[in-house]
Image 1 (cartoon, helix red, strand yellow):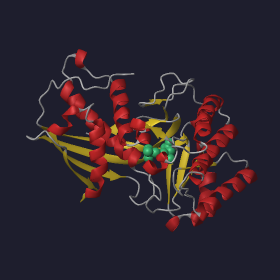
Image 2 (cartoon, rainbow, N blue to C red):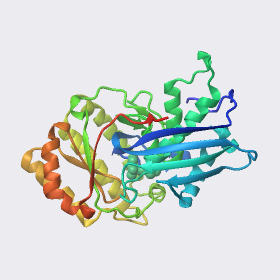
Image 3 (cartoon, rainbow, N blue to C red):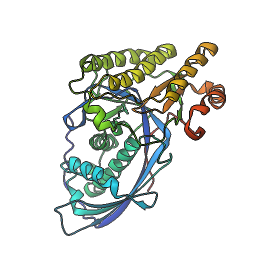
Image 4 (tube, rainbow, N blue to C red):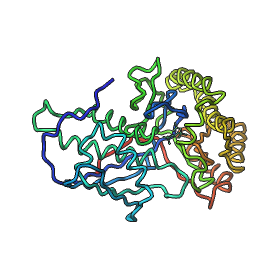
Length: 364
Ligand code: PMV
């Protein structure tokens, strides 16, 4: 395991500002169930999204008192004290690795490219953007002009992913693109439970610029928080078999990504989505997170696929919204299908079109 402890502050910095933009991601093989310290019970893999992003500016200024964290947080310019407990927990979890946090007062200004109340989880993009900002401060504190002290890009990304994981598990898959693996898998060299890595093997052209249209079926607050959801996997009657299945799916996906077998890809992706929901339906307490329109959409996608031989498929997060995935060469046809047949099932006819992208970038 890499050593992520903070080396030492060489530079004295009184104040500064850093801005990062970081994307959301959509899992093909799902992370659902964790051990202590956000260690996943099984490996997962996701597409990084190009346009669904959080941009976070972190202003920092040295303070006298170093006994507590001090920060304020704004979403779209509006102070958001209800976000504070989550950030405080995040800071506590990462403090050991970035011990300078208590030396500064922070102003966190954040905004999302997707609507706040869209039911799209912003924790992956939000926590990864914040982790990247913290890493930029670490870099500024510890780097000198000597190349010996220079922080490698690879270390920067790995530690950013490691920190992001401690904020929200799936956030560790939002540091780079296009395909990110998180969680140890015996056939994926370099895979780790501690951070995400770029999928290291051949990926067929079919998966380049893959499209994701997110159909907003339910824009409300999540019915079940992911913390509660992950905990439901403890003592779950099917947990052990589910974790094994995720490993098996990953093995199959390695071959599929290489050969470009889209039918086999569809089978795994849809099975993973339904398994995630099946886990929630069979836990205690149990939940149904799909809405009637989620099912209408799934059935319409299956009918369209049968009718047209399209390679369209769906995946789901822990909610009612549907991610429609399809190859770039079907973009026009599938958008026509979505506009003609699927938008009627979306709240206020809202959807977000995105595609698989390259990941995070520093703005300032
Ligand atoms: O990152 P968390 O703790 O919010 O968990 C997210 C889990 C899923 O989105 C449902 C699946 C995944 O792998 O992203």
